[in-house]
Length: 182
Image (cartoon, rainbow, N blue to C red; front, side, top):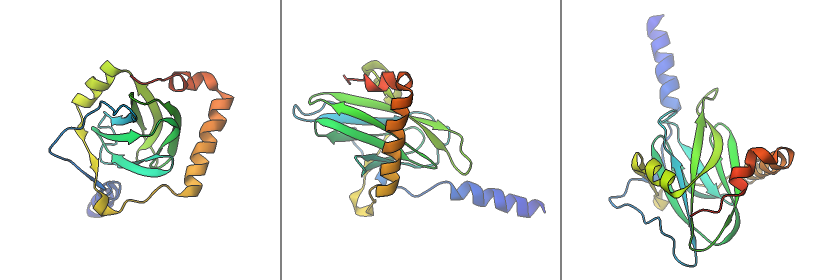
């Protein structure tokens, strides 16, 4: 019986750790955006749920994955865009990106039923972002792995839920809605 329980626990632990579409390059990215673009940084600076990979999207298009103590960087065209994360659940945020600015989001992690869940995004100011990134490893998308964009129905649901939550409780989203980057 003990061997069976041990095997079940091992299978459960291994099944939660997914393969990734990311690599750890030898260089660090520049966080300073080009004059005509914005830079988006997503930081997962906790090891809680560390082995569970979260997929991140910009307007439903895959931009990278995070796991415990990692961060990703994307260049973004100016304008209003949705950032979304998918794991056992989904979360989203709408940001009005301005050219020449950096937007750094902390990705929240909570306990899930089968694997770690996201509690959504929270904005970081420049000093907070620099501190958070110091304890993390930079990951970059490896296009040869062929990651897929977010399922259109899942994306629509995530955005609809986000907009309904904002409308119902705007005070809870005030910090995110007023975030102007740095």
